[in-house]
Length: 412
Ligand code: SF4
Image 1 (tube, rainbow, N blue to C red):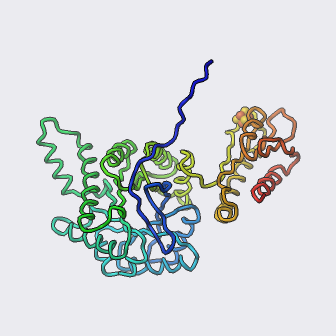
Image 2: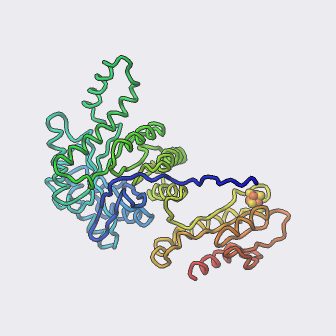
Image 3: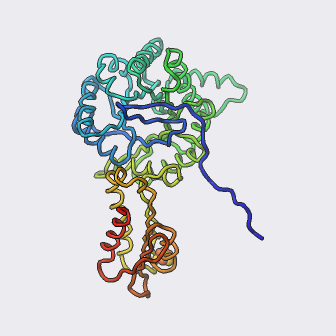
């Protein structure tokens, strides 16, 4: 016999603490036994409370479980409670994260309604103040988090790394008999900044359970190196993302590559895909991609999957591509409603195939599948439901009829 037990592949699990990010009764746990969470960030001016609330709603409906907003000025801080109010009125309970840099200590102290309306604060230890002021200002933000019972993310970024710490480590490195590469020192500075800040927060009374960490860089191999080490050195939940990933295909591929490798190793408890939207591209695209990464790895299921062959010289017309796209668009568009109406609908598998070579086989593996006629084949499209041939479609309305069959199947 040639039968051997081939090892199954699945992402590893990493033991972490669990943070609670909550708005009212709606609690999003991060880390521990929680699923890897999808989050995103608005690109509106937070002062525009209505515009910001509308974009948050779009991101939340697309599947973003946490949404971060910029809180950069007193005007933005004053607008945050209004953003929250608008969302509550719309029935959107997604927790909001305030992104603070430079003046977060002042804004959180001077705008208590803002501090309360947010569910988590992002603190960048690289720009929270220099020298003696650093610990004091950092402490003011931690105090606000403790007073209002909010989680914090200590988010280090190599674009705004603590320069004093980096210089100190560089000096130390220069004294070594065999100095490390400059990049290795930079990795060390990122990780040290995050972990030392978390320890400082804990020494001020913050619970370890309310702390998340991130160390973002924009190179795939750099991100992998930094997060592998960060995961070794602490058990805080980690926010994972490739910062400034870029535009379009490049940004998507770079994010998917870096995040997938780390997620497979169990590293990453909440992810954000930082894409620069192309003109006219919806901000929600980053949520779709983040969800797709988790779904492709088998970590989560968000939307029914549509299996479609790439098409080749055997496909006779564009009907096949159009149908695959229209079914995919239709299923995604319905999900905000279906998720509550039809529990488990996200596990549905649909196949749209271009010819008889793999069409019937792949369609039988799906819950519902169609094999369109390829060139030289009879103009008939067999439909398979639960692995059995259920009917054959013919004529010009195959796409619409299949659409209806899928909808009826879901309703049943
Ligand atoms: Fe080509 Fe048929 Fe394979 Fe699709 S299933 S890629 S049409 S051979």
